Length: 211
Image (tube, rainbow, N blue to C red; front, side):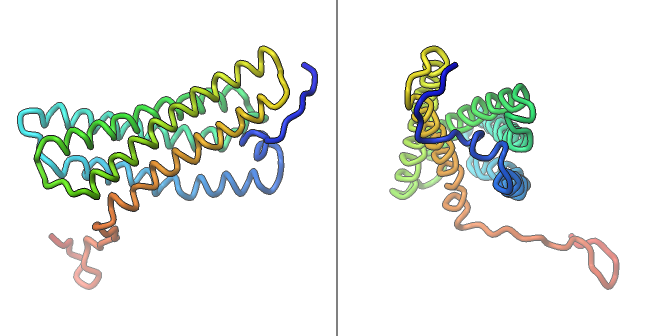
């Protein structure tokens, strides 16, 4: 395939075979992986803070499925980060596919669950809650739109190898990642009224467990 003009590298090309940025990227993703998995449990409790009455069992199962997708998304992210496209293209590609599918399913279910709980009247909804829901919905729609357009550009580049098409695909990849980060960044708002702490369950002096 002949070389064509481009102005942006993809994320994989930028960090895959160059040091030290590939190690910096992997270390950063690994450091936040544990926190993000902890957030999965937190979001499970956050969604279940409301009781949906007769539909609570269905609601709970959807929450469990959403959280499962969130966990798999993060595991896939660590995998595709640890194994670059130059190391093993098949593992990297499949991990990226799993990451995107689970990410989109989670964002969709998260928006649906929030809307359902808002409409249920199970708790008082403030204008701020509505605004945050609309922002999350916008980020989901933006994310899936940019991702699908990027897929189109990727296959178009492979078919015709036109100038700058691969760079526009790279830009779509950046926007997909940034909108994903922004969506998950709402945890700072969702849990703004909560505190995370490590609480000892055993008295150091007596050796007895606390209730």
